[in-house]
Image (cartoon, rainbow, N blue to C red; front, side):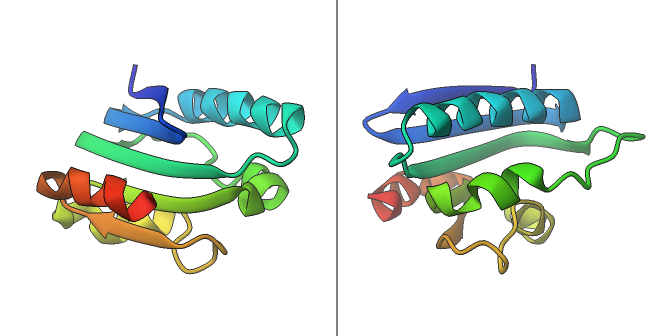
Length: 119
């Protein structure tokens, strides 16, 4: 599995390894949507850790933005930890520059600073 999730001290952690599959991202978004529906006041601080990234699954439609439009304001802050060579494409993929939430990139050796930044 290329995506795993966990909760830790009020922080949602999304770990992506290898190739990102659309079906796995859809499953994570569906579970998160249920959390938002169950608790309308919920705001997430999200730590995304990308390791050994092999790109995105080919031959699928990645253009579905419905989760972003429906729940984008529910994301309070996003820290992305990844190889600096992948910074531009990964920040673009997660919506840097269009999301209202503050977003910041950190290299893998700065994961503790990412956690601190998220608060």
